[in-house]
Length: 108
Image 1 (cartoon, rainbow, N blue to C red):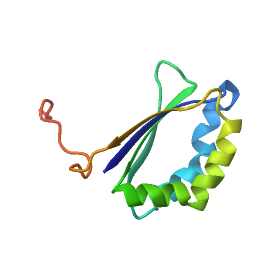
Image 2 (image 1 turned 120 degrees about the vertical axis):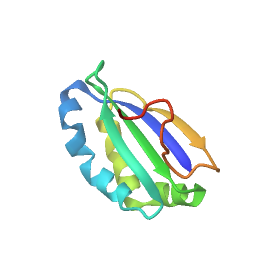
Image 3 (image 1 turned 180 degrees about the vertical axis):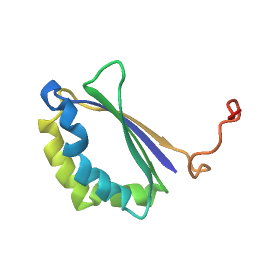
């Protein structure tokens, strides 16, 4: 699995619109055959920061993702929406295929 986490610093005047600005891109990525998850969250400490957590089945799925028309369109638009360069964490976890249960916390 390829795990990618990206911190997006959105222009203040666009922060509330971010989910709608990225909706088409988000839906297209989630429909990719090699996509495992693609989830946005908004910081509770900085309302202008969103974090994207995305997972892809393998390197090939990642290559298909960045070559996709919707990816190219999004990276063409996003520079107009961000206040600084996004920060990325990329992990190739070959022996992991997605989320598993957390041992330390179980429902009571």
